[in-house]
Amino acid sequence: MPFGCLALREGRNYNSLSEITDKYEIGQVLRAKEFCELCLAKDRQTNKVFGCKKFIKKDGRKVRKAAKNEIMILKMVKHPNILQLIDTFETKKEYFIIQELASGGDVFDWILDQGNYTERDASRVIKQVLEAVAYLHSLNIVHRNLKLENLMYYNHNNHNKVVLRDFYLSCFENGSITEPCGTPDLSGNPPYYDETEEENTDLHNRFIFCKIVAGEFEFDSPYWDDISPAAKALVCRLMEVDQLLRISAQDALCHECVPSNYPWVYSILRHVAEVLEYTKDEQLESLFQRTAWVFDEKYKRPGYGAYDAFKQAVSDPAILDCLDLTEEEKNVLIDNINRRLTPQAVKIRADIEVACYGYEGIDAVKEALRAGLSCSTEAMPIKINLIAPPRYVMTTMTLERTEGLSVLNQAMSAIKEKIEEKRGVFNIQMEAKVVTDTDETELARQLERLERENAEVDGDDDAEEMEAKAED
Image (spheres, helix red, strand yellow):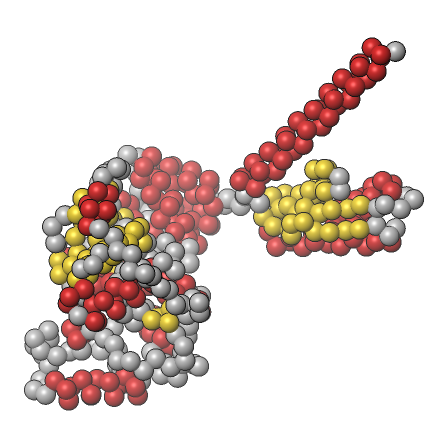
């Protein structure tokens, strides 16, 4: 079956309504959307609450197509900034889609509640949206319905994680996409916007589309007066008509106004708040205002200023003296900055096979391994341990990930060259990489298992020897 073609309910094997209600307690309809109804669904076993979309088949072909489309797309995607699929059901009359529940409300409502929205606020959301869109584009999926109402805060206590929802208008990119798709609410027509003077809505829409196709737009005053030149430059590159010149979502993530280090700053301040037992959102917000926001504003780099200042504080804590913090807050902040941002050594590992079945045998292997060990430096000592002949594990610890990988690869090349001189064999079982605790735990299990097997073999030999003596 071609990529992107997913058959739903082949053979029309429908779910019964009782299958759904036995597993989930479906609540009352909370909201009706263009293609579906929204309600809550509580798992009867775990009591966990999810979001539920119900598509009514009799509402027409477009509704049925939207439901199938959303199910197909959601089954393919898994990303932290995309609302994840939990379950799907199809009865003779409806489609049910069970998803994670994003309880923090949409970004549009949050802006209305706040009354304002700063560039700093926007940069945090934009980064996450770009990451989700870049992921979708890597799968050749186009969302086609990006708007503030489809960006949800994950929960009320965390107005930092944003998730993307509603994929029923999404499609696979296969050349040019010519089908019109959009939200009338955003076109500037009455009754949504009273300031529109055009009496002819169709004429107004044509005017809007002509400006879009021509790439004509303005940064109206006073709304854009305080926005940085970098942010305006990014908007211009995203609005580029020529798709060959338009910046991609992946490249936009590298733009200077998109914060790349904000998660570090948030994690540090969140932990500071936990240590100080700040349980209210207002307390966390105040901590941000008196720390991260001060440096972002000072250096005019939203998302970067605070991170750069925190990094500098590792060696020069005095940089924090300008902050309006209590002595306790400052001490806890410095402690967390040191623990989170002080460079940590990483372990790099590679698994190799080295053997020589000729006259020199084990001596050739030892000589080859010594050639690898000679690539060690004082900063990056290399260790080679036997797993089980002919397999060996090579490791080094370093603060410089790239240099560590390079040194280990040089060592493997030296081993390969030396053993092949002796007509031996060399194979890489696992390329050099930074290993995690999970990798190390698995290696420890392997070594323990081999040691146990060797002990069993030794025991068998002892038993055989005793039997032989008894017979004598």
